[in-house]
Structure formats: C-alpha cells, structure tokens
Length: 254
Image (cartoon, rainbow, N blue to C red; front, side, top):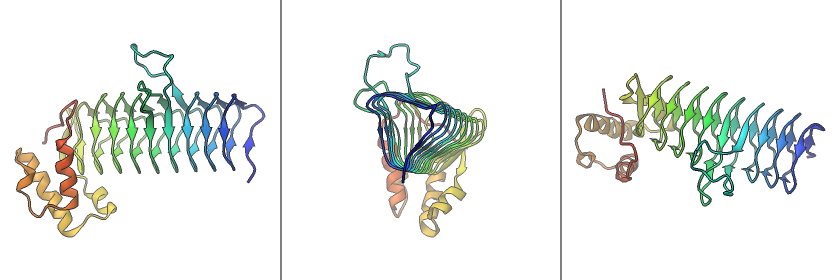
C-alpha cells in the first residue's frame, strides 16, 4: 500500500521509510531515522536522528523519540539512539530519550503499551508486553521485564529492575528493584502479595502457581528459595533473577 506523508511533515536526509506508513501533520523525522512497515506516526511528533522504529507501531500525537538524555555528563556529540521493535503503541505526549552508551540503545521490544504522558529515560530497556500506565516515569538505566505493569503515576528511580509479571500500584514510588511475579504498592513501597491475576492470565496455574505462592512466603521470611521443591521453570527464573547483581537492592515485604 502507498505511504501517506502529510504535506506539512518534514522528512530529513537519509530517512528510511517502509511501506504503508503514515506520517501526520507537522511531524518532523530527523536525518537517518528508520520507520518500518505499517507504522503510523500522528501529528506534531518529533523523531530524532538515527532512531529506529520497526513494523506495525502506532505513535500518537506529540510524542518525542530520541532526544538528548537528561544527563549533565553526556557528550551530545556521541552517536546514540532509540530502538523500538514491532507492534508497540505509544500514546500522546510521551518522551523517550536516546542512550548514553554508543553500543546499546534505549530500547523497547515488542507488543508494549506506553500510555499518555509517560517518560522513558536514557538507557532504559522495556521487554515484551509491558504496560506503562498514564504518567509513569522511568529514570535512566531502568530494566522493565516482560509482562510487567506500571500503575498510573508510578515513579521509577534510575537503575531499578522491574521483574517479569510484576505490577506496581498507582502512584508507587519505586526506589529499589521489584521482584518478579509480585505486587508492589503503598508508600513507602513494599511487596505485599503475588500478582495473582497477571500470573493466571499468563497461564501459570495449579502446581506451578503453588510453587510461586511458596516462593512468596519463603522470600517474605527471608529464607532461601532453593529449599522449595519441585524447581519449576518459573522458580528457576526467580532464583536466577536474584543471582544478578542489583544496583539498588529490592523492596522489602509487608
């Protein structure tokens, strides 16, 4: 299908545009950006140089992707960028900053929903099927793992990891890591139960769910996960997650 590029849009030199792409009124695509097939960029968006956007993405009005990181030590002459893969939705007024590391972009994988007024800081990585609810804010170098959900107005400190299938409550102030499969809320933020609905929607049930329930109780007591049997795939993932050095430590339990 034919591309539609509004006559008021500005397309820089060296921009690569796929097929069936829409670029709305007054949007600016800076030089050497890449826009994949079937991607829709609405009006008044700014896509900065070298940004890579894959296929089947929908980017709503006034989204800014690839602007300079808010890091006073950053050398703006470095060639860094943002990479967005496929099937993502990025809603109005969201900003996504390019990385500070020339070898690794700020990156969003696949099937992620970033709701309106969110901010994704430099060097963040968002996995697959992540949901950032309205006005969630990520400091630099955050890792948001697959199927994690950030409640509205969640504030995530730099260098924090948000584990797979975890969820933060609305308004949570997250200054440390969030353990996979857990719900985190209240202020000060603490883990208070399993993310039961998210886990079951993902398809973890019966004996596998019971193992995670045991894991929550063991962690709450401060004991070793290795004492749980059987060691399921999800439990092994959880054990491996704790083996990775944390920059921030993790939140405690209620």
